[in-house]
Length: 436
Length: 70
Image 1 (cartoon, rainbow over the protein chains, first blue to last red):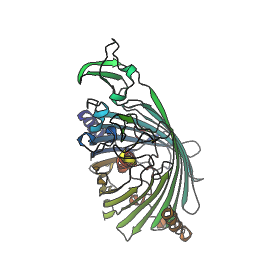
Image 2 (image 1 turned 180 degrees about the vertical axis):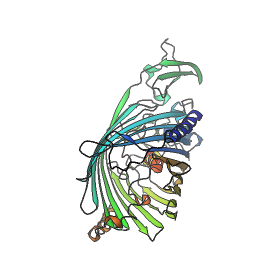
Image 3 (image 1 turned 45 degrees about the vertical axis):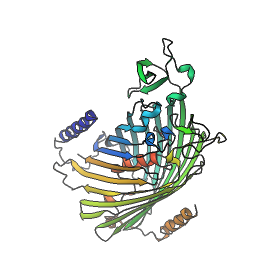
Image 4 (image 1 turned 120 degrees about the horizontal axis):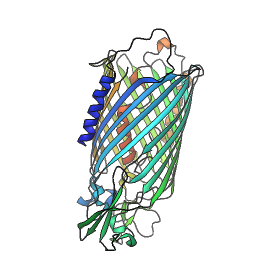
């Protein structure tokens, strides 16, 4: 973790030096055809959660159901801009995200609590968009890749098209696909018996599979709770999960102080939609099962945004979303944020978000499901609950920069989240923007 | 569902009252705080909300997939 923090600090000072050479101002109206640096964003976040009834332990309400999580997320985004021979603006955006997390429940993938309880995820993205100002259109394509310890990989592709109307409206259509491979890391006591053997032929009482960030998989073998060997390379079977989304957005300037947007996603997922290390305990058995969920899920969220500039210094940002899916979950989300402009370039924004959802048809708490249930889960993310999220955002964006001309803006945001499932979390995020 | 449809109607009722806005009148609309998209600093919030809650989407974030989550 220290290496990641030092790396981010190093990137920050490198960027400051990269912008240290002053460029002469372009007054000729000439537009460079070569892509040139337009913007750099560094986003770092720290997330800390306390929870119980973890899904790895089947929603166990006792101490073993500890669901505490920390996550340190770092992202670097670089945006380049240029013009082609037809005068169209081209945008090339590349980003790299690195997340490091710890999860107390992860240790109980092994029934003795010996499994790896942390992990790293790396996810680069690349997006290209071309805008025709004369026609008011923009077309874009993008690719995404993610690798983390319990996935071989996830590949994402997207394509988008937007068009402006003559009355200050804009319509956007986007298609996105994620093609995931889930490594079938089962709870230790549920690994098929035939695999409970060392390559030497010795039988052990449990084998834990761990995968490093580089993708190497090792088996740790335990006998009566003691580690007896490690480093055996194994191939763990995987299952696929495909997610397709068609997104529609229409935004409209309503008057000189108000604008709004409507957002609709049609999403469909197919494949292995559970997680192989989520346990479920039936009412009539002490033996755990692996959660079993349907192989398809259709989702329909509909969202609305409405922003209003009140007076000279206050902005009201509102959002509402209604959601339902084929698993029976319905939810309502409503949020409000009120940026207060202390000066034209410094703002403080308190915000509040309310969320409530019903449970999916297949959820039941620990020890309630029976063998008669075809599908079953005790993952409390799919249970009925309400949540409140509130916090404060501070932003500075003076026209002449902060300290250095190229340090364009600084933003820090803190939020406190509380669910009626007893999950409580805090998140603090930082965004540094640099422009040449 | 009925509440959502009602809100949709209330929201759409603003649209007929749309007034053409000249470029010199757009100083407030073009303010960075008036943007209709999520701030970059909200990325982690969108992520943890999609992991801890059963619903997602219609907010500029993912609707599912691309991660080690349901």
